[in-house]
Amino acid sequence: MTTSGAVNAPGRRVRSLLPTRADLAATARDPRRDLLAGLTVAVVALPLALGFGETSGLGPAAGLATAVVAGALAAVFGGSNLQVSGPTGAMTVVLVPIVAQHGTSGVLTVGLLAGLICVGLALLRAGRYMAYIPASVVEGFTLGIALVIGLQQIPNALGVPEPGGDRVLTVTWRAVEEFVQAPNWTALGLALGVAGLMLGGARWRPAVPFSILAVIAATVVAQIFRLDRAEPIGELPAGLPAPSLGFLDPSALGSLIAPAVAVAALAALESLLSAQVADGMTVGQKHDPDRELFGQGLANIAAPLFGGVPATGAIARTAVNVRTGASSRLAALTHAAVLAVIVFAAAPLVSKIPLAALAGVLLATAVRMIEVGSLRAMARATRSDAAVLVLTAVATVAFDLVYAVVIGLAVAGALALRAVAKQARIDQVDFRPDLPGEHSDEEHALLAEHIVAYRIDGPLFFAAAHRFLLELTEVADVRVVILRMSRVTTMDATGALVLKDAVEKLNRRGIVVMTSGIRAGQRQVLDSVGALELLRYEGREYATTPEAIAGARTHLQTTGLLTAVPAREHEGTGPADPRRTGRQQRPARR
Image (tube, rainbow, N blue to C red; front, side, top):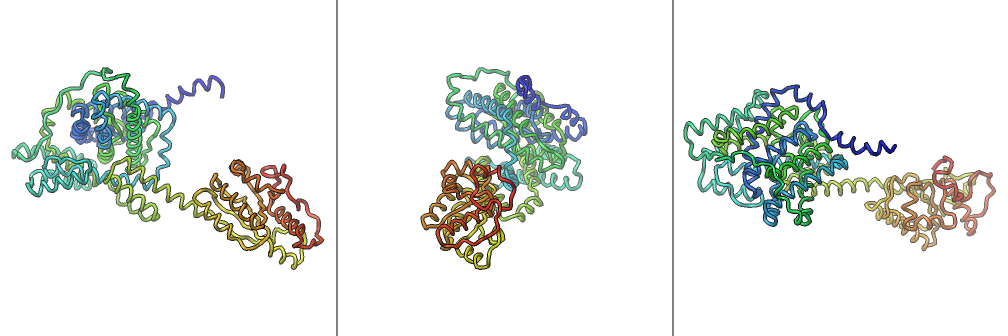
């Protein structure tokens, strides 16, 4: 690369993360559907934004500011056409202890720092590593999130005050207990009515926004019949605060780095998983993970300036966006714009929407998030995929998103290593077809009595190495062992150490070990643990198997176990010249 090219590389990298003309053109394809989808998402997002803001400790206004500011910036600069961003339940869990320890200014500073970290991750192209998350983890996460969303709506659907508790299962159980003691059939009827109208209407007329119609109908019914037990949203904050950096305290930055890293990790993980789930719910959509990190970074840099909490891609709102027909970023932008209008103009009207009606919307969304066909296919694929899916879903409900993904990845990785380790094989092979020269049947028998050849196939690494050691050191009482290593696909330090240990154990039993076909890429790891020097001892490393067999025959003749038999001269029947091993050897049968 030239000097000018190196200088321009960062500029090209930044430009690759910015919006393109294709993004603008996509917004003009079906604006009507995108506008309706954005309006629907705004109706769903409003109580969530207010609730998550209150739960975080910064108040409803903070949640609403996040939904407007972060939602708009992430829609413009993010890497997904369908992602809707804002405050989320998973993020509030992380923020509560930060508020308790550092106060409001600490949370705002953490959000700003987390945004900068996300931008840095985007510039480093860290988003591409999301491709290594198995599909079973993503499907399990989606199922778990759908269950959590549904369970979170139980208190509002039953019309009871939300009980205290850190776990959704605990809160749900307490809400059911309160409902049994004092049933609120009005709220339950509204919630089930809205959910039923949405699910049934979607099958009948998918293009009609039944969520909006259902919410409007529930609100009208509650007002006409004065249903006192249909609790409304309540008073909304008026307007957004002016942008300010007054919350920054340079002296506290050092103590906020660790919380900022945790918030950035959660923002990146939840946003990228949400975008991946959105891709799976559609046909033809594919997000750019690095651009998504960049957009979330900018959103989290800006949100604290308006008093907002850290934001992520929100799976519930994104699912509503997809299910109501969104096809471009216009829907997410409309969602942010509608919320902004509500803040300044329509707060009194929206405050009358029953919470039970919004609970019904999310209950229907949770049901529609569950793709039965995909779950069935994943469960039938392999037992490992089924186990990872179920474990990830259960962990999402029982713990939270971060723990669920970590557990799912750990189990999936362990199962993958187990499967790869099973591919490693060490098989005894018949070396007689490789014997150079002409030999009598008697010599063939003598050689077979004193020499055994093994072919090592597949990876020789930590997960399979000890099984290899056990099999190799149980070799019968022979005088020479030939290891054919040309089919070893990969080797780590553990594999090299185990190989060295096996050779030393065989040598102590008086068995000479010779090798053939060691690849150039394996020499460094063998040399690093001292195994290569051991294998080269007295010229016992050979480039090809015929050469190793010839060396074994020479060794047996030297020790008097085999009488020299006149044979036709063949090129390369002695030990290989160390200078010709590895890639410099001529191609030969191995």
